[in-house]
Image (cartoon, rainbow, N blue to C red):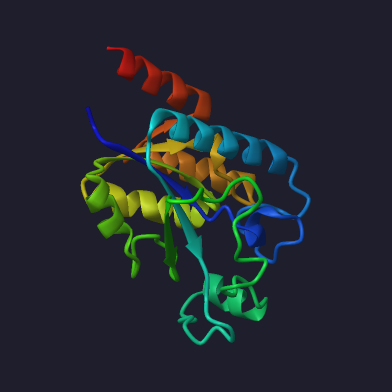
Length: 200
């Protein structure tokens, strides 16, 4: 049976709270904010009950953003908005969706959570070969991290309703695209499938 780990990507104030400065993953007046938070909380609780290691992934930058390579729009906007400064409220995990004591936390500074981080080392330590991936935004960190994981040989499951994009059309398009490289399931279906597999 594959060794599973849960990657919880960017459940941070800057993208989840209405006052956050980054709207790529959640529009300011999004009508699914509470639903995504509830689904994410349910997925995290399931993983912890089941003994599945949870890895919380955060993006954060130095004060002044000296470590940001501004080669594309997403990073130019981070700097313009003064967002995701390490140690700030915006870079903190959103209430109820952060790591518990003793759980792994990975920080990165690019789009793909593997790039320039110790995520691969953490997964190797856990001997994980199956990743459940959820987070914000579907069209940035989720899709790029899932693509990298698939290329690296991991089996990947995407928790569709624990992901979000500020543009619902982009969310749907990215979800459809990821079906080529991952199993895409609702949180309840992931929970039911995992329970059935353990019962065999």
